[in-house]
Image (tube, rainbow, N blue to C red):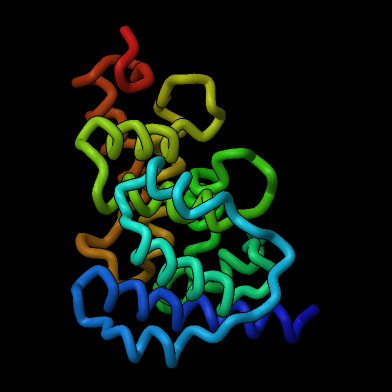
Length: 201
């Protein structure tokens, strides 16, 4: 099990780099074919035609994303602990675990306790190519920790604190005691005590 987690973690980091190449147009077909070898997975995603209709990716992009996801995490799913370990490597000077927890919950749209390829590619599609409204709704869901349709002061404070913790000692300006509460208080006093779900009155 530990070996699988390590392999999945290393693989997802490699996958993130390949994803960057795909999005910047620097990924060649030969590189994609060399990097992504076929492996057996436990979870098979929906058909690519259906995902193409549901996302802003074309079939070729979905094939590259799927091969990478499948190759780097052979089980076809990522659990929260593995996600936190992977995410923390991008923030070595801080504690990313709390923010990674919130981010994991936002990616895990079905609340299954794991991120499947469909979850990953749907969120990625919104964040990279979605409309402003779609991006706002996704971000709202990230901040709405208790999923009651509102963002209250405590939720905003928890998210801001998690971001500062994640950035660590290199956060500028340096976070002073009570700073996250002050920032959230200012935001909420300008916008009302609770923020309603995007698109709702």
